[in-house]
Length: 314
Image (tube, rainbow, N blue to C red; front, side, top):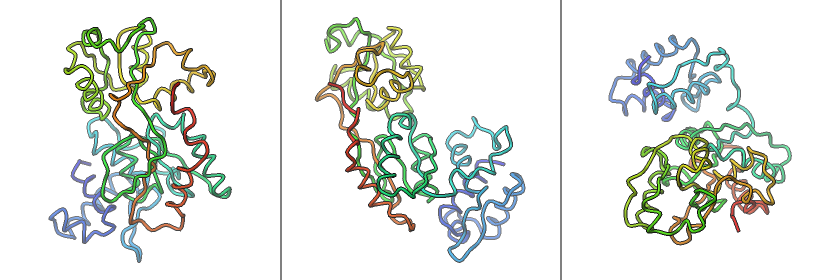
């Protein structure tokens, strides 16, 4: 199995046609069919089947698509099969209302989202997939999720984005700092930021340039939210995080919601004009037909009475 085979499979699924996929990949249809059959032989399951609608995923094919998309993004880091051998028998993405949600929003947002869905239609049953934003968007685009709940990201022409929560970025740092927005001191403080490959790092750099006029020299990089929060909690520096990420941390630690921010092991400071406008969105594919009223459901969730709950600090 190689990256080219995975890319061919993904293209077939996206186009729902071996003929269209072969044109896009600039190879003959028989060659692409042969490549697909070889891939199916390697993984030991049938991935797609032909129907009146074109090429459609099988149940194990749906599960494999999730894995294939991950491997294309990080080809050197994953295995094809889960260790427990049950990967291709998963029905997580195959029945009912299929929702994807960006990590780490699931802990903080899902209760209100699911409550709104239940109010909209008590008969709807939900299957939840929690993944990175890019993967959630891919699965929505491919029609394997009815909609996603994602952090701020760049708009895409084929996807409809509906903002449902305002999600300000705040400064977090040591609780002992009585004036964290002192720019002359802040520029010389240590910062703990996400890796340059992650979207939040771009936001952090933009904030630093707007606030301080330069990027501080003392920066450590991490790729995990909870590692970052742990370092800040230990007094090792400053960082920028969306409030939704902090709320997720609060709920995982079982803090009392009424005084949770006072009990946190770090100080939260609003950035005011320096915080770029950010929203959490419901996203769905514009041209995917479904018997579920996704657009009406998304608008109902947006207007839900709980949609602003816990998303701001006083």
